[in-house]
Image (cartoon, rainbow over all chains, first blue to last red; front, side, top):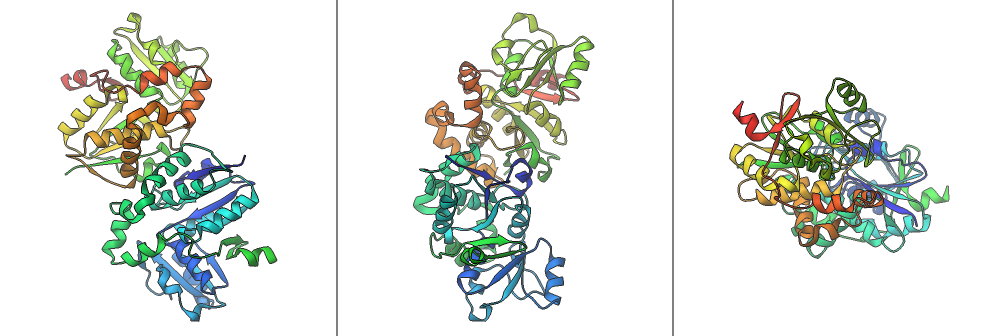
Amino acid sequence: MPSIDVCYSPELLHLYNLKGKVAVVVDVLRATSSMVTAFAHGIEKIIPVSTLDDCQNLKQAGFLTAAERDGRKAEGFDLGNSPFSYMDASIQGKTLVMTTTNGTHAIRLSVAADKVLAGAFLNIGKVAEFVAAEGKDVVVVCAGWKGDFNLEDTLFAGALAERLKDSFAPANDSTLAAQHLYRLAKPDVMGFLANSSHVKRLQNLNITDDIIYCLQEDVYDVVPVLAGDCLVPLNKAAAK
Amino acid sequence: MPSIDVCYSPELLHLYNLKGKVAVVVDVLRATSSMVTAFAHGIEKIIPVSTLDDCQNLKQAGFLTAAERDGRKAEGFDLGNSPFSYMDASIQGKTLVMTTTNGTHAIRLSVAADKVLAGAFLNIGKVAEFVAAEGKDVVVVCAGWKGDFNLEDTLFAGALAERLKDSFAPANDSTLAAQHLYRLAKPDVMGFLANSSHVKRLQNLNITDDIIYCLQEDVYDVVPVLAGDCLVPLNKAAAK
């Protein structure tokens, strides 16, 4: 039986052997939720970059850009990190260059994996379906917050492990803990997260609507997958 | 109100500012449980060292030594990491040099803190009493397993946060998660840990008795505290 492991932070990723495995990178609030939303609304490619400088360079080359730091849209870019800003017909068919505090960096660090997916509650069912069909070991890479553990990404990891529990074994204590926490949180995920650090941080920025939106399960069927330097929707990657 | 934070792994410790705080280092299975047991049975000092070489050098200088790697007693040293081996009158008044896979290293990494304590379920009540009296911010440093998260140290962190909840605020998501997990586990901690990685690892080594022993709360009143390079019992450190 393949296994599902959970890495709580990019700072711990060197302890995980991703080779031959599927990495599901998650940054629920809000990078991977925004990516899923963007693809569902017609974006063609997303180039995740780690630094504002890389993003700025690609803006000058003519790309549509999105940049967020500390929960806020960074100055001088086209878009920020709110999923609602990707629900716009003007983004259709475009390539987006994106940098966020945690999520895009986590994707770049996961390239050793056989496949790198962007997971969120919004597309969790389709992610589960894809990794089950692959049948390889899975590592959920939580983007965390500036290198440290966070609850919302851990809940996603637990939710994915729960969906896969009949065909994937927990690899480690981090998977078991994530499953316990998700089972506790499931009846009221928003209430469970009310005291969490990042939810409090975002509520201070008046973006409660973003949080409620990002915690919805199975809204979209799209699975962003890394192909070279770009994320593309899974069906396009497979058709290549 | 002071805060209680939880660092899930020594690999994340660079993200925590320990200055002016009390670090409670925990390696439930079994380093800090053995240390507490050793002091309760008359050991005078423990010198925690990170490497087998350091331990060997101090053995040659005439010290009593304890060494464990991967759950087993390392060859060529006097003692291993079973708390039962410290219940012997022959250790009274001696200085012990100790190296373990995770715990002693975590202690050495925590020296930036104002005070460094060794915590275990065995002495949790006395640890809680001491840190409450100090009134400073607390960081629980989980020794983890080879750099990664483990459940048993997290449960200790949650148990300590629960004991302190009226006077210490959770600093971060890691504290909240640890508290949730401890509340879930509390009715049957051994059962909760039955599928955890390290418990399975130790059960394979036939040391279930050690595990049952280490999960008992409030057996001893001793609190080991780092004074220079040595751990000493708190009352001796205070009397200096």
